[in-house]
Structure formats: C-alpha cells, structure tokens
Length: 305
Length: 191
Image: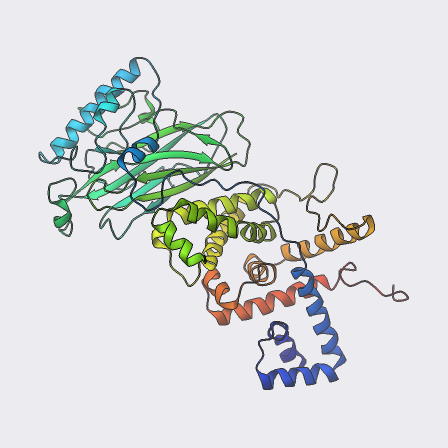
C-alpha cells in the first residue's frame, strides 16, 4: 500500500467507516510502517484536539417575532399585534390622513369598483388612518412596474404556493446604516389582478394576471436581544400625481421613481452600538388580501455601523 | 417529544413548540458559529438570525432532520457574517487584560488552566487557518458531531464530497497542528 493511499484513508479510519477488508489492510500496513504509523498518530491526535474543544453556551436569549408563524390568529390578536406607525404631530399628520384616505379611494377605483376594502381578513383600517395610525397592511394603486426601485439593492423576496403569483419584496438601499440615521425601507406585496379583492376571487386566482396591484405590508424592526424599534413615521410615495402622499418630503430620496408604492422609514437611535444587527420583518397576515392566503413574511438584516 | 413533532406543532402556530426547538439547539448552533467565526458577538448574531429565518420559513421546511436544516440555515447566516467581516477587523476572544474569555474548565488549577488555554488557542488558530468550506466540514463533524448525512444536508453537497472534503480538511489541520509544541510536546532531549 503506497503511503499516499494510506494517508487518504486516515479520515475514514478515524471515523471507523472503512470496510472490513480495507480496514484490515490499513491496520496491517500501519502496524508495519513506522512512517505511516507516526503520520496517523499525528492525524488522530489533531482530530482529538478539535473534539476536545469545550462546548459553548448561547450567551443571549433568542428573540423571536411576536407573530404566530403559520397558524390563524384571531382578528383581535392580529389587530393587537399589528405595529403602529407613529405619526409626527402637526400639519403633516393631517396631510397624511387626507392623502391616505385618497389612497383607499384610488385603490377602490382601480379595482373597477371591486371591494378591496371589505373583502379581506383584516379591515382597511381607513378609520385608524384618520385617527392617526396608518393602515397595515394597506392597498395602494397598481404600478405598471412591480420591480423595486433600482437604488434598493439590499433586498429579499418571498412567495408561497398558497399565494400564486404574489411576491413580497423587502429592500433597503444598503445593508448597513449609522446610528441616528434614517433607513428607508421598500416593502411591497404584488398581487395579480383581476383576482385581488374581487368577490369570488379565490375561484378566479388561476386566471392569468393582467396586471398587478400592490399591498404595503406590516413592518417591524427589531434588534438582537432586547433592542426593539418601531418605525418613527410612515413615508409613502404614490405614483398618482393626483394623490401625493408625502408628508415630509422623503419621497425625494434618490432611487424612488414615480410609480413606487411603498417606502417607509425608521430611525436608528443614536447610541446604538456599531455591529448591532437590526432585523426588518415585513408581514402580510393570513387571509389578506384574499381568503385562504397564508401568512407571508420575510426578514432583512441590516448592520449598524 | 422529537424535533419533527415539535416542528409540526410549530407549523400549526404553537410558539412554545418552536421555543423548545430553540432551547434544544441554540447552544450547539452557537458553538458551531463560534468555531467558524471566532467571535462571540458574531456567533450570537448567527444564532439569532438563524431562528428568525427558521421561524419565518416554517411552512417551507424540508429536509431529513430539523437539526440538519437548522445547521444549514446557520451556515448561510455565518457566510453572510463572514462576508461582512471582511470590512471590519476580527474581534479577539480576549478581554481588555488579554485573558482568553473562553475558559475550558473553571475547575482546573492555574497551571493546567494555562495549558488548556494554550491548547484551545492553538486549535482555534489551526481551524481559522483552514479555508471556510474546509473549516465548516471539520466543525460540523468534530465539534458538532453531525453524521455524514446531516453534513450533506447542511452543506448541500453529496455524501461522497463530504467525506473527501473532511479528509482533506483534517489532513490540513494535522499539518498545521503538527508544528504546535502545545499539542505535540517536544520530548526532553529532542529540543
């Protein structure tokens, strides 16, 4: 047996996976070849040293999303768990409320009189928008281009067999951001039409989509360990010039073309330790926008640096 | 209750079942990430992100075992961290006084403890000297004691490739450690 061939058998011999005859030949050679015997001793001692490394314990509690992963939640539970976007008080809030109401109207019109606002698992939350909290999730007018803005290169997407044709996209412009800075988040579920929201839609979902409409998902931001942040405010852009929904001008951020649907923002608190990983989770609850749709969510990590 | 049963309950929305999976596997995933990446902070991030990804992808879970699937997700997370780590310096496993934070056994005496720390550092350095794919093979097999089949699932490579990669990785590791007088003390009279 050539030494090179013997050395190639060291790993299998160590694991005891050599076949009977091969194991016997290996043992016979090592017993009579001092060079191979010494080499195998070094090999075995080295692997033993790795195996002797102490086990470690996870030093931090694992933080999990508050949403149930798959199961149907009660309506009350879902409403209770939906994140609330905190609007900046003042005139901007009023502008946002009026404009958000306009979005709902546009969405209804866009559906050709369909009842997006009523035919879904969670209500349109138009009232809560007027009351200061935006809808979550929210319908927005369809876009001719369902692709995310080009500047949002740090992206993930998710789909589900239970949501044929639908795709949830979550993206930011970069994978890292400094403490105290604002992070713009693009989050959008594209839904094939004409099925979205129409009565009897479930039966018609196999129809080839003519166009897509969009839904702004619920967003949540959490950090490793006990860190948790709520979006500071909602910044939505809408391609329809008749209904600009831009309470604070952030729609002018680069890379957001006309026709973009869903840009939201949150601010990383000053003092957040560099290296902290924040997890942005976009969630579309079950039965939204169509009865029978499963929960769909996707995570995107960004590093504070 | 085994992992598969817990997984089935977690898929139906049982958070406690998923929490049991976390409790069962978090330490071994942390150990793997620590040996792959070398820094406790990054390793903890990997474990956190692994379970977040697992939680959001429960409906898509495939694979022979939950354990192998979790290791696969953790390896992907670790690769992401490794890519980010290129842009920032590695953090040593030592505190401000230069003491190795990771103590093998608090019951050891001072001399034995010092020797154990030297051995730990030597093995850790030898692991870090391996290419990432080879390091992953050694860690999965010799640190976490995964079977060849579990390794194939976690690494997404055939079992034959697992064996050959592990063989080469162990050989490289032995070549590096052979020069370590901590692992292979020089007999008196040979120095």
